[in-house]
Length: 121
Figure 1 (cartoon, rainbow, N blue to C red):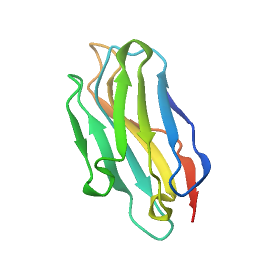
Figure 2: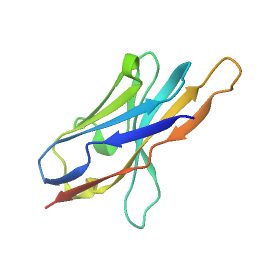
Figure 3: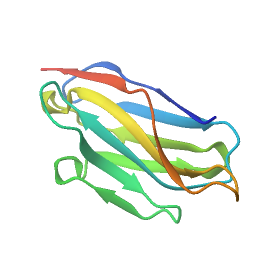
């Protein structure tokens, strides 16, 4: 059984920073793409950033230049460094990882439980 455990959310003032972490635990053969999504109240979940197994990154336009996604493959962990936060960044942030448990399992997508980020204006 694989679990994604997120941490690092909280309350921050506009202009501040937070760093989110998402660690995958369990028996894992490999992790392909990792990503962060967010969902604000009353809105659909949207992609924030993603990173490939080779380190290539992709960002939503609304976070370019402010957020940085990175990964530590040895720790099965993906990070999201968020700088210059504004009120519109308030949302629940979810991590997402494309994981293969073993050679007998196909790849599957796993989600974290979500962590609240609240930016006060």
